Length: 331
Image 1: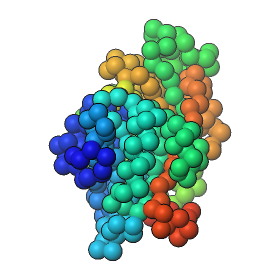
Image 2: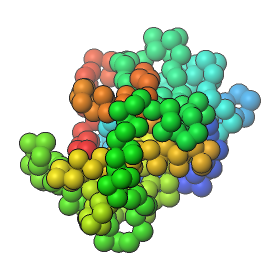
Image 3: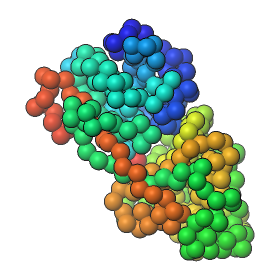
């Protein structure tokens, strides 16, 4: 790794930086990005590395567009998948304003002309960096785990607390998926949810993608079951050193009255705290007020972050506003 200049990281170094970083999310991990690249093979999972002046190590994981012509200023990358966090993370610390200045100076000489980054609520972008990038605002909802009551539900607003207790009275139970058939069960209610939202079933996340994701370290499927053992709700959660995020979820419509999703999040909030995470992240709400209200019913607060893009100076006009071409999953 050369100081002041980006170079492509070996997989082992990528893994080491992300594992040590206080700002890394599950979306920065190599396993996650390799699974996304297997789903959409126009892209490959790679990470740029940068050594700062004091020797601190930075990784910028991303999906890079394949193709003989996708080189230099015509190269394209997205960090990470659309609507999932990304951007540079440092093994030794959160990036300071001085660190960001070095990162942006190096980006001007990066081996890619276009980099889109969905941002990272753990790694703020300082104002002086925003002025050098194309930036818009994103918002997620988080719970700061060290501020919770013990048990956590005692601090929830009353309606949420009642919903969790109702699920328990109704006999809803929760466990991490451990059998191969449980991924298929979850996929079935995911397809049902997609259709209930008025979309074609083909827009559901493919079963093969789910099967690959649950084999990635830190990606876990948790399942809430009704008293008859049918799957009532489930979710894919990504665990990182300081951060746990709810990425994908589904619920069986006829069992929604059992409040399985409330029980699931209550249990995962406690699990995240038990593992030493700092933030429990419900993920952005895509502008859906009902989804936003559900998250706030747990006491989650909105957290804004910067979504940014870097363009090579030659591409300042060409490509402005274009998407990177990846397909975002349906939740």
